[in-house]
Length: 557
Image (tube, rainbow, N blue to C red; front, side):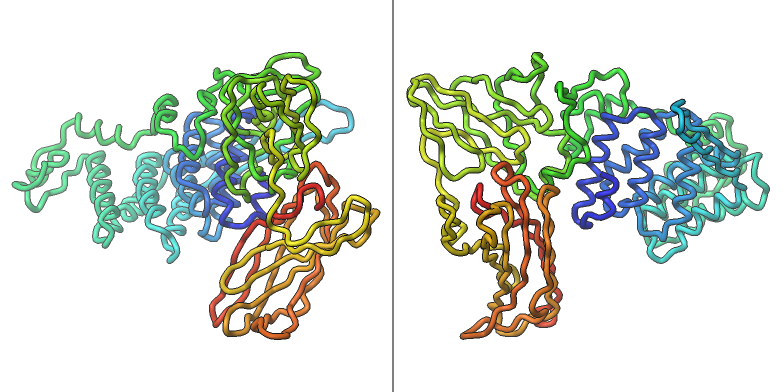
């Protein structure tokens, strides 16, 4: 997932970050691995990750031991220094950790990963961080706030960081560093941002209260006598006020997991239950099979249509393991299956549940059989023609392909053939009945169609797709850039277009084309689907569009 996060389009990164958090919550072997993974994620996609992901990262660090806190803070300081200021999530989490645990980075830190003990395996290298000077820690945060691109939310957390560092470095840092911190806190007393102005004034009052210094209030008759300052500082502050001010800047207590679960954002999912936010005593909900299960990083179904919702009734596994497994309503393993797909149609309601083959790693069951009054026909999930109906009156069990990304319900009626292609595919006798046309996309006056042919009648897995570009506007289109992505089980050879300028399609104008050679290694099991991205300039405006093409005849492409 982290490797895919580097390459995926920016509009998909927020969803991938949420999925990474779900994996970390359920499958992390220890706190250090969890922190490493989340910090790496923030360095890659801190600009796109949601605030809920940032909050979860802070919660994990705050609930860990001081050793993990020191390790995480050291690593975040280094990442913040290497960042160019664009990864907002990294800056938010790093600034918060420096404010809470800034005193831990003043000491050097080293960690020796445990060796597996296998012969021939190199001993893991020791991870070491040098101890930092207080002035260096302050400069790291100050440099971030002085950038023109620094957002207000980072400046707000930097103010809190400076205030807490004033308490953390008291008695450790020199007088110049402490005075510099207080000056940074007062920097935004005249800011145009109300939130920054309020924080700056209130934090200044807290720091003065810790020192026993009162600050006069200009209009005491209209104030709330904050920290007993309305008298202008004639009497010394009470010990209760000083203690309250110090307590306000103390380390944040560990977050209550039960409260966080009640306030859990819906996009993070609710099926994780008590396993969320690292609760160790939560029962595991993962399903297993005798064959060893699937791969979390398997991208085979990245272009799939998404799994249909499972029936409400419980089902039994029909596998070699011989045990019953609890089915879930959503897939937690194929984490990339629905990124590019449209929502799946809901499964039809069943009169009574029937035993069916189930994929324990895709979170979907095969479709229920039809009522016994009419025998159901066995149906290939990707085929256009159903098999002959059995003569027996009892309804047979519906079969499902356990590795298919999309399944179709079994029904007694003959399914409707795909409407997208405009010509039939190769005949059953092996003769070629001509090319078919599949609509690909239409956006901004540019229409793309695929003319599909089989170059070799003996090799049904190979296909040739000729993309034809039609300009329906009244001006030429320039800078054509057509990109195509395929699932892992499909190999593709894409040739350059005949031209990057698409003239107005009219009369006998020759169309701009681009040839794509496709080989579907799982023909008959998985249908061909393409992820398309097109960019062009129309009438001086840059246009980018992403679409999914899945209208190819089932079982033929």
